[in-house]
Length: 460
Ligand SMILES: Cc1cc2nc3c(=O)[nH]c(=O)nc-3n(C[C@H](O)[C@H](O)[C@H](O)COP(=O)(O)OP(=O)(O)OC[C@H]3O[C@@H](n4cnc5c(N)ncnc54)[C@H](O)[C@@H]3O)c2cc1C
Image (cartoon, rainbow, N blue to C red; front, side, top):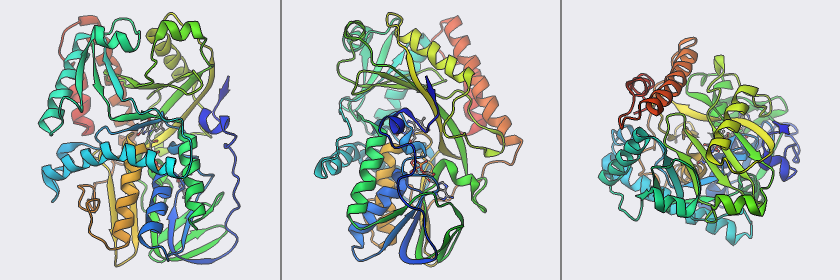
């Protein structure tokens, strides 16, 4: 089994090492974007559309897709990004939140249309996602989530409850009491998406340099060991890696997420499991999991595991710890006890969590500084919209995207250490304990431990 090497997706595509040259000396451009993940690359894409004459340089510390964009679960999902009550606090209000949700739904087809237009195959299947409930309290939470979605303008065609029997017609998982289904999600291969997008923007005239770490971002310049980039506009797209930058140490908490992928399953195993629709499959326990059936017949499954490293330290090229690996294997066997899959690859990565668990896109025309990110684990679709929003702000256009509630909002910083580490650990300890208690007691109520964790971390 391989462990690390960025991710299965990147390794399988032969893309886990840099392929583009580093910056060689000082340079002048109109727009410099730091970070070649989906946010940086979609921003580059939309800046080229909005300002076709602008020169655009993307500066990447490692290689395209090295971050969460090349390591994620491959859910191009329309799930709401951020917490509605925080986003509704701003000038865009409730209507703005409802429009952000609609924009997330529409973005799925828009992303796939861009890929199709440039003939980039990302192994997409647009068949929705499922969230299963295996205890009465999980079922109560699923029903409550659907009720809340309805209050925020979603209809039964956007999100609905499946009975245990209806769920079993799709996927055979033992002990499922019911499931949430939404058609608004597509399964894809993340490495193909992010690297395909990089090729698209390069063809459009954007320059990408790899192996070039930005050490300082100021109005008009980006400092790197290889040279200084002078740019009227400097945009930060570093999400879970933001804490490494001076002046931004406590803006974003790098939350860990971990994944394993199996070797391809046999026809007989797939016949037993079903899952012919390739829907995204997730759980309603507090220690959330997400999974997909890959294009080549594997199961990829992820969850939180070790949530956070003291002092916002980052992983070593995606290497996964043994405890989390065992937890994910256990989860996989519990879901599909009839299959006997072999684990082919394990990895982890960081996603960016702001203090209020809600994303922001900012731009100051006076300084030319801007940023986008903080999707708290929902960034594959949101990065497309955030990049579009940021490009419109840079072009000083007022559009549907700049009117979204994430525009120019400020978020307070995370607490200093050790409070940050203790908070993250306490949260996941409490969630794990709450899952165990709920399963043991069999009641249809969420454990007070989980409610307490939600309150302390500001998550609900
Ligand atoms: C394991 C895992 C599973 C996930 N699953 C899903 C999912 O299924 N669906 C979903 O919607 N979201 C998912 N997410 C979250 C999603 O992947 C992210 O929100 C999204 O990819 C963020 O994209 P980004 O471009 O903002 O950040 P990243 O992809 O992290 O890119 C940031 C880039 O900036 C570079 N960088 C950082 N600092 C510097 C610097 N100083 N100088 C130069 N370059 C720098 C990094 O090397 C990196 O390439 C998952 C995340 C993880 C970790």
